[in-house]
Image 1 (cartoon, rainbow, N blue to C red):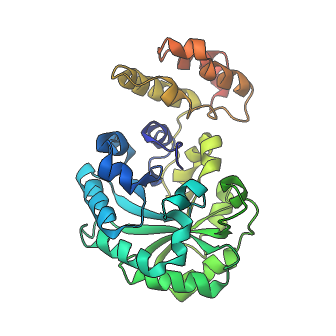
Image 2 (cartoon, one colour):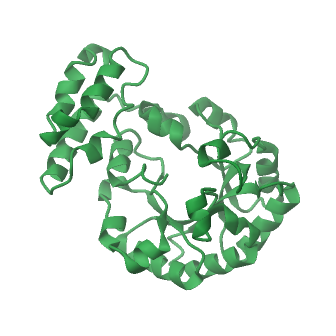
Length: 318
C-alpha cells in the first residue's frame, strides 16, 4: 500500500507474525531507474520473507528493477496490475494494464528471464476493469500473462472502475466476485491463487482456503495490527507466540533507538503503530500520545513506553 507499508511498518508487522509474507508499498520503475535506489529498496533482514511490489509497464525497465530486487535480497517480485488511482493510470500501469494482457505477459517474461527460479515473479490484479467484468475477461488475462512465466496470482476479487471512483470507493463499491476468483483456480489448477478483497477477519480467510492457496490482507491488518499475531497459529500451524502487546512495544523501542540514531524521525516509525491497542481500554490515549507533535519532536523512543504506561496496565496487554 503506497505510503503505508514502508520498511518501518514491515518491521513492526514482522514482530507480530514470523511467517506471513510481507509486501512493500508499490515502487514505480522510474523511481528505481532514475531515483535514489537505496532509499526505496533498503530493508531490514528481519523482514524476510518480503516481496518487492513494482509499478511499471516497460519490460526493459522492469527487468532492470527485478535485477535490483535480486541484488537487494528480496524473496519475490510482484507486478501491480490492480491499483486504480488516477496517478497510477497517468503512469500507464496498475489496473489499466489489465486492458493490455500481451504487454503484461512481456513485462513478466522480461523479469523472469533475469531472475533465478528461487525468486518468483507474481502478479496482483483485479477481476476486471470498468464494465468489463465477465469471467472470460479475467480468465483470458491470466492465461495470456502466464505465457510470460507467471504462476502465482493475487486476485483482488473486484473490478477496478478506472473513471468516476476514488481508490477508496474502488475497494468498496464494485461488488466482490469470489466466484470468479475461485473459477480461476479450477481452470488453472497448477497455478497458485491468493485471494484479496473484503477479508477483515482471519476466520474469513481460513474459510477461503478450500478454494484458494492463500489470502492477502491489507488495510485491516494495518488498522488492527494485533490481528496479525493470530496468523502464525491459524495459517501456518506454528506454536502460539505468547508475546503481549508490551513485548512488541519493547521490541519496537529497540528498533526505534537504532533507527533514530541514524537520523530517522521517530514519527516515521510511530505512525504505523497507532492501531496496536485498537479495541482496548486506553487505545485513544495511545494514539494521541504517539501523534503528539511536541512529544515526537524530542525524537526520543522512550515515548513508546510512556504511551504504553498511560494506555493499559501490563496485565491487560496480552
